[in-house]
Image (tube, rainbow, N blue to C red; front, top):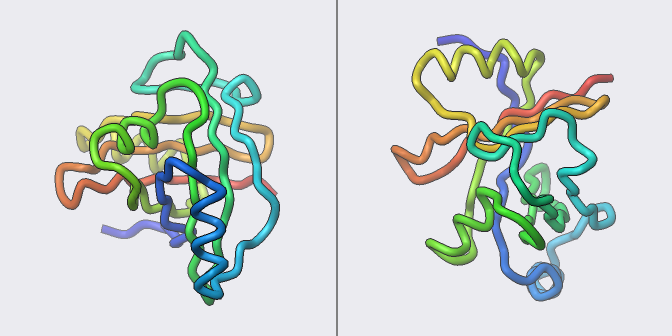
Length: 149
């Protein structure tokens, strides 16, 4: 099966962003960029498990750079998200693996036709994202993301 997926990052769900950053910095691992606050009210067509949520979802996000490899640290702040569900069931840890794609809609259609459920998705003017429930093997979610230039 051919695809144009390009590795982008590994997502790590964490309970405490400040402690996580302090820990990685103590190891000499660089934190890149500033923290961003994901706010679902800024996202078009935002869905959790295929439905528009009743409450806003907020996530603190920060990237850690290890050579060419990026970790995306994600701390749930408000609302329901795959990261919050993960933390509640398993504690801190690797939650998802993200890939950039050229055409998010096309790749989403391919996976949905294979019976893979979209569990977290949204669109912005700069692109979009979709998390897929690929936890059947390895208990890791796949995120596909598209950035418009």
